Length: 313
Length: 184
Image 1 (cartoon, helix red, strand yellow):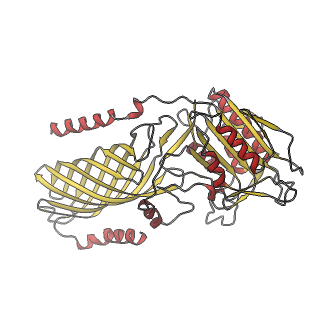
Image 2: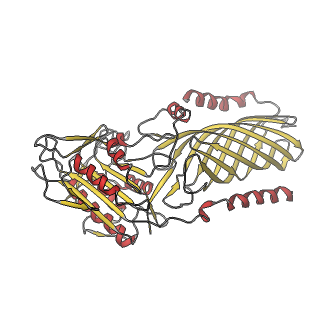
Image 3: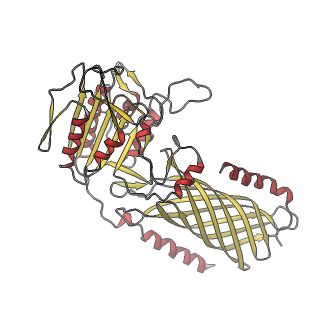
């Protein structure tokens, strides 16, 4: 009986030695840039939203704190806010060498992404957040004329990020944003594609997989997304849970923990954020038999074999 | 697909009614390192995870040197060791295998399996279909006419669309022969 055990030990040992993670040097984390877009829609025909602007302000503070205090890296945030009835803004951002107006109409957002593409490196992390209205894969950006709106396709937004070096995390807190999550060539969302036959069809469809450096994290799949009052402060339900996941205390405006609660073993990943949000958001992620008429929203993330690491502490 | 799963489940439930000599139930457990080799460009040639597997079979038949069974399988695979900016997601799999074994000596047999499974990435509501095939050796540990306990050393290929993964580990396989005649 000794020979089989020796053979087994040799096989296991040789396979463990193949563990590339132990021998290949890891890349260093770079800088963090964020574009934070929020609209209150008081200048458009869309319903007004009160929690969107606080969402952007606090996300900016939370990501800055996580990056600078915990991950010991450099953070630069650019807020693109539509506030009140004006269809313009006097605020301007200097991104690299380019001055970009901070009014969140499509042209300015595209210009900001284009400017970012000239200054980022493959080690950097780029975060884009959107708080506002959307539907069926389009987000509602700021209008150029009063009482109108500018629908902007999420896939076009993601296409613009393809020229930006680094890891990209796109966070969308708006209705039906799951439709904007790119379809993975090898796996299917169980929220949007429920038929097992379609999962097998995907296996054989010939579409090739590539490692994506862009992840999309959304507040809902194919349903509405909500905002609520949290101790007198208005926020998106999803964003409020996201802020908690980062360790941000909305009540005091400070980091409440040494390591974000969504982090595991010193690493904060996109899946870690999603899991924390699903477990801690104030709305259920689905209806139940006993509460069939409650509001619910199910956050969603890009599919595929890999999870992206955002911060290492 | 649901129809196929239903037929397999029905066979597993009804087949004991027709039990006769050589018919058996089985429970197999194994643990393994899981080495995933991506078909896309990655920072490292393969990512390392671990996992465990449980198979139950209510539809097995053994005669002479031959052994054939249809088994239902759960496989749990952990997330990989983080490296760089990524790690491979962990997932849970539910599948079915057809297993064939040939006994070369009294205490030694070779086996092969083919199967398919659906896999659910943990926590992210994403699923994919895949296929698996394995070969391995089986070493008899103890037996009597109605029970057999074996040590198994399988090498499994998990054929995913964007990844081919190698699992090699160690397991045990317990067979119960419910009829009076046992397996002899």
